[in-house]
Image (cartoon, one colour):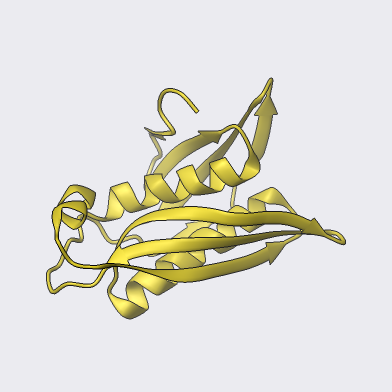
Length: 146
């Protein structure tokens, strides 16, 4: 995908962004990129020489919106519970099984002492979340409670 993968948009009390992509899985990756970029000092994490590690994120849902929501919430939980310096999510596998959409993704992080937090995000809300397809491009608006 060329150009920006996400952009932040104004919201009255919380943080909001629109993520775009050539597919549903691109939208999920780019939504996570927007979330991580808002929360963490990604440049500091990437510059650190610590070994790159990963965690498998597996989610399933009946719609692309809920799949995105569940995935972002899972990422937030991993970061909060394990104090991870995460910098990227990559979808490894995306498939439909029955009436469910499934995603297997890797959350990449570096394990080193140091707080790279820029802003605390409490949760991602499914309220108003709608994935759209215009031409060949997908987009989704996400609102996070900060």
